[in-house]
View 1 (cartoon, rainbow, N blue to C red):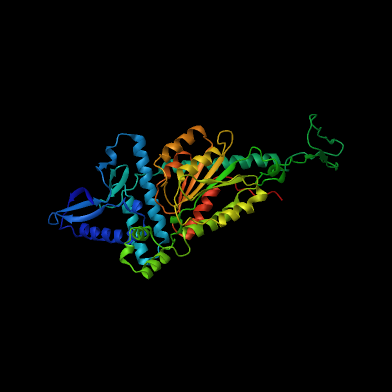
View 2 (cartoon, one colour):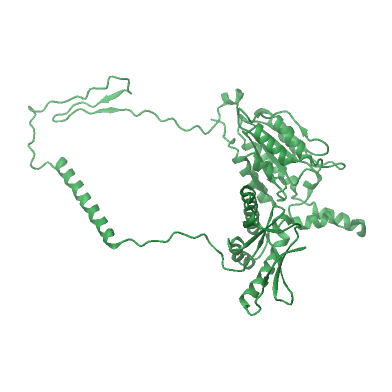
Length: 459
């Protein structure tokens, strides 16, 4: 752990020391429930040098630089977005973690201090870290409120009153019967309004009554209702409608349970199984892969999501199971979606050589789609990054965005590691973090809804 900076500590300032203790309690409360990458934005505070200074530390390695000192505006904007994404992850996690009401109130009281623009933001290898100032949250300055001038306020009401009186006078003059000569029957001739010669909807002329002019009524033209459904004719002739490829991670890591934090999973991955008995190792594995796990929940929600995709959209499946390449299927039409759903239901990680060829999967999926003359979509459901190749997946995404500008890639990140965010960011898509069964359902629904391909069949 390296030190980012140190600040003078006034031991006589009891409030500041109390905030330091609260901050350390906050970190201890959040750490078990946050991913390492999300937790890394919160610098660790320690009293050092005979308690004369507060030292701020981080697990990140590299040269710390203040965010405000970065001159590259595009890089600065990217880091600011990363910072905001991590803060959003913290806020989302706080709503879902099993803690007491008192603990939630405590965390909620600290969230404004974490988001305060008065904090010092350091950057280490493009990763933001917050050094908290323990000051009151700094909010954006609002425009001063100028009280209205009483004189003009009363003139405003006076002018409004005069306007209303004038309007009443005009209405009185036009419609009041007093003082006007009443026409006789002999003096009155019915006037029939002549229809306009150009084509109009059929009119209805009411029969004349004594002392009454005829009135011509036109049937209003029907207003076409917005089309919020897909006709069966469009389904049969879907030659130029969007297509979609679903990339599904079928690697062994997808068997990890959703009932454990990422920190617990990391401890399991680095556990010393040789020091355990066979029964202990099996019990440990069973606990870390118990249902609901990443794969079972993702499959269940994917099947539900397929039912929400409009019937004229053909769907193909790309599975990530082993190196060196992903496996692809042909496109399934609406009437064959049951076969696609059966294929997803049968997904099971390989016992040997299980891996995540994500680079291959995205590359192959992009070749299956147009993305130039029509809108096409890729939905990635994964819990990690490619471990089959060292090829730059961000460069691949940039190439896809250039050559297929109408191809959007959305990502449902099951582990919340933010390792492939660039794929969505460069193609105009979005990243949806899902680390619990409820989040998987909600975020998958959002990922599909944002594609604008969920219209029902017209009945």
